[in-house]
Image (tube, rainbow, N blue to C red):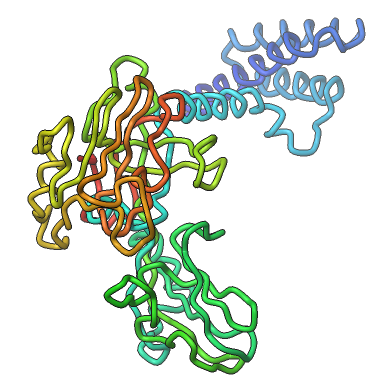
Length: 384
């Protein structure tokens, strides 16, 4: 037992000596000559006691050195923060560099890339169908693993329901429903549309033009957050972007888009190419595109899994969503040497280059690489 006690005391004294050395190195210039002299003397005695086998001598030398350090450098509030500040700065710097130059997180807000990537999507449920699992705190645990939460939208005032356009919404992935001039946001896919793709009803909720009273439920259900992905920031520094890659780009300077944000689409056109759409095919320089990979699956209207709906193919922009640059199968777009064409995989519901034009090369951020959340997503992992 004496051996183990001596070993523990020797280890404790070594730690005290080390701290004294750190104090001399970091704050020696701030100590007066008396404090410096005493600290050096007591450190030497502690090292001498360390060489012996007397526990009491080691204990006395360590206590004396501790008292001297406390007097010379009184403890401050949040001392642990001061001691670890350098470590925190380095850790934050590494994290910021990793984000800026290697892999940056990005959230998919809308359904324009479905079923390859999902934005915010929902399932209507009446309030009485919601269970205890849909209420806090259990709902929070469900959200952590599945990204699913419960939302009940109630009228803030009495009035008539009016459906607004989701384009340019302040909440990406949501469409404002107007009652008495007040916006009430519901997921984009909670809207039912007619054959002309005009919204007329909320799934499981109210219709356009309905009169409601304050507190009435406009819509309720479960909302799943969009896929969270990592964007590869370094790849396009070493190689040219390729057709078929999922591109993340800045909207700054692109007319018709909300400025200062980022969009995600599939790269379908490269510099110096001419594009047309002859549904369900994308035509490049007069030839139907059959690859790589997912581009062919989109044109063939295939499914990527049992859980997913089939792709709708490539469609002209004149599909009920308003006029566009590729409004008919006769229209074509020619790219110059510094622009790329961006299209959503969900062609009927994607506001993309068919409407607002190509993406300048300087706006490119990088290709989407991995879906890392929600953990239960069937799309978890590498992106194709």
